[in-house]
Length: 246
Image (cartoon, rainbow, N blue to C red; front, side, top):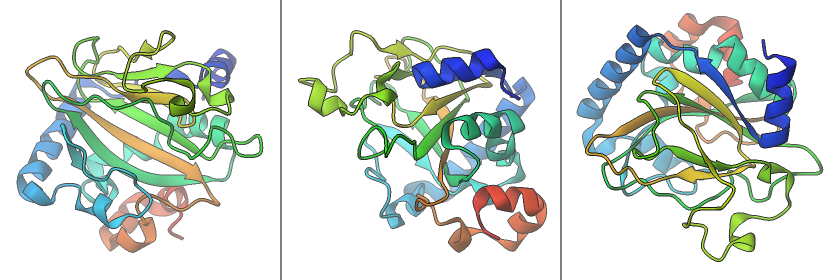
């Protein structure tokens, strides 16, 4: 499902654009369901993250969060089962991987800045990667609305941002911004230095992350603990293999 050029770009730079995998109607349906969940869950939105000991910052100032989207509507199924996305995850993690979490993040106006970081305690583990992320754009990502920044190639270094930079909150001279229309999807090796930027607009900048890990790693959200019978029936064996709930 990935071209040779896409695989080579992903390997070299630590990220790759997969294009617009969602139609305008699908983006609209996702945003509608998210609004419903935010209204229903209120102050408890993202509570599943708080219960997880594997998420460093479960509640983030300046961003709305939702978690465990696997069990919150069929509309979210495509976000962790799309064949092109799974091919990209396989290119980074190999054949033995599973979904770690499926969460929503929206950078609030004038907020959303994150320090450059990795989603693992070091860049590589015995020459292999352990985590890989997918970001689904629910709004256009622009230079002004808190787009994710990535420092290409840093997944191949043994240094963390705080070891190489005086202040990881500041821009890196080599960083790029993910810029693309709503419905686009990017894969990034989660060992690459990355982080959110400040949303300078007056509207939320919305996205969903389908975050994957190697089979030998703990999930951010324990899929076996949370999976419902409704979800099991809906996604079938193929979906359950991705969730590692069989």
